[in-house]
Length: 446
Image (cartoon, rainbow, N blue to C red; front, side, top):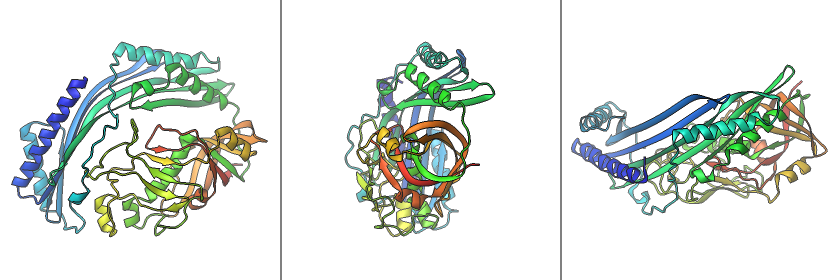
């Protein structure tokens, strides 16, 4: 898509949404909402300096939900022709007749609709031609392969560029959309020494291609990570301080967001149930939702229901201040929507003013996690158990790489045991955190 195409396409989607809502009203729906998106992208993967995959794609889709009183019906289509859209609306209306009444069903309250739409700089097209993409990933992988003779194999280097637009509208009269883009570059290689073989990777992602890390740097870092894991051994089972680097720390906070979501709270399947206004993190931790960050991967002026987003603190000085709710689950819980239909918008974790080296020095002896495996997190109890690899540190220095261990604990204790958070903020996702140091975690090994 060109810059002209994207805005023309957005205007087409807005007209389509308006027409679909009109049809739903004429069919007798008391309320209706619809969302549509269209996009295009290019992705290329090179492995061992040869093109392995090359894909260009265009996609589009529309979904509509209608409400007949408290009964809901929904349908979707990827065909934007008038006949298909009419059939989609008819199907949604027909399905609503079979739906059970639900007192929480319906659109978000009209007074919560967004009225302001600031430019969040989410759209940065990349005129990436196929030959350029191939050259870019070839250079990225070559940079990794030439670092050391022990880098003897590759899972490939990949580049992906996507741009598109999204539009949402409902029968409150809300109709808005925006164009956006996302680009990424990654590399994964294998290092071998004798019978020992290790794999690692590095990646970069951004709205603006100018904000991506350089291809050679990504390749070098992937190689250095893989080489650093050679000679890994198991640890004896112990309880020790643990560092989560920034790229893994976001996942630890992601478990809290899952436990604070409306669905988990309503089902009483959350280890943070009934914890509002209670300390759930260490007192120096503040979690702030920042939906208006320019170029942010989670930035948005409104959520999936048209509700205006807002900057707010979910956790302040360790105390839980807010949940993460859509209008449906807010009604189920007797609360107000928090503008989070579709997820969180740039959750930023406060730091304690130290750098990564300070964390290692303060830990002195302990474990640095560099990879986590498995899904051993129980959001009902908070029990946490995941396979891990990393490095054992003694007297503030890396002693040797570690693999085939398990990091275990309970998230309630882990959150309150966060000693410090570094300033090395990782912005490659919707949760932005620096590296963190936990006071004590169980490492299960020999």
